[in-house]
Length: 126
Image (cartoon, rainbow, N blue to C red; front, side, top):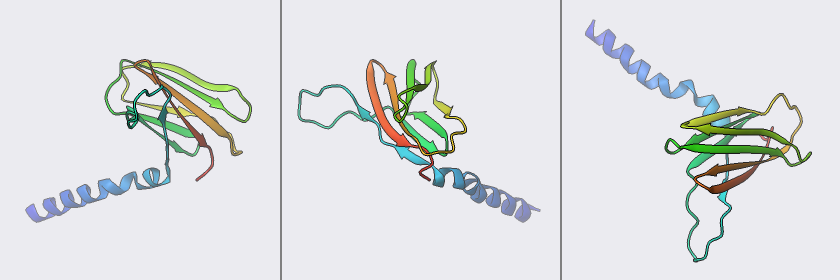
């Protein structure tokens, strides 16, 4: 009985990594850059959040819980803002861009602690 329990437990630990394998493999990272001026010749500070696009869904994952985050997504092809959200104390945000079947170019702006971070991405790249 102990061997069977150990085998089942081992199988569960091994299979957990494969459950979200398709989602993780099909998403693409959005490169975010800071929009503030640097007076020194140094590397820009890292973005406190990572952004990913998977199909028509944008996922923002924060490195630490933030006080307030302002997220704006703009369609660069039409010039319209399609998403605006002010969130507090979130670890992650998932944004559905809708059922847009055509390829569109977007700009995402994230404001955290008075600093603006921007990135550009295209839907249906994958």
